[in-house]
Image (cartoon, rainbow, N blue to C red; front, top):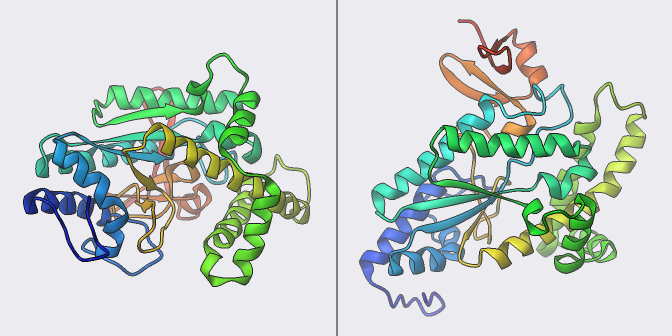
Length: 324
């Protein structure tokens, strides 16, 4: 183990250097609320032990990434409920990141995508069959594109045959905390800067939930949506924390990745999904080709640019392209 408290590193310098280089590749594409670069010591410290241990044992390095839940139900943001070029390119990017690691370290790395759509589907308004179809399509893409460094894990696998509602209830019961405790934490985070992270998360979730419900199929007022979203955000935090705890239990040696921006020194390593091109996620937007480069944005933004919708040979909408 690495003793940072005394500045002592009882390790092979070569193994430590490899571990630092591996983390550096992830830090190059990190999502952070801090102004750090890939060499930031404080950003590496929470993850270095796990990476170093894998290198020392000559094992592949395991990363877990809760992501690819399912498409937003808001068609002002996305093309539909199935993966499109946005997901495809993001998966290719993640696999290429692992390929880069393999050039540094022969045993390589693997990323387990812990699809959390089923964890939150009833809260955010995603249809269960849409989540199932999305999950199956992601698995198919990984196989078809031969993305050998990627695999998936779903909540459904915990208790096959049980209802989705029962599985979610069991998740919260065994790995979660009460809504009352979370409300208290959020309130405390609003008042105390040392605990502001959970309040920032709560505010972000409220904004996201409101945005996802602002579409023609929703017949209630914006004020009602906001009221509902404030309540739902507590359940989102509860489910998110429970899912995190379950993942840590199932994959204790894995480095925890996140698609959300993280502070310097966080236990989670925030990463972008298309290098430094964008901070948008594929399930909340569409892929847009501009001057030969791919970006992610909300569907309405692409349409405002006058981008043309591109379909595949079967007529399925794939991405937008801005004419040059």
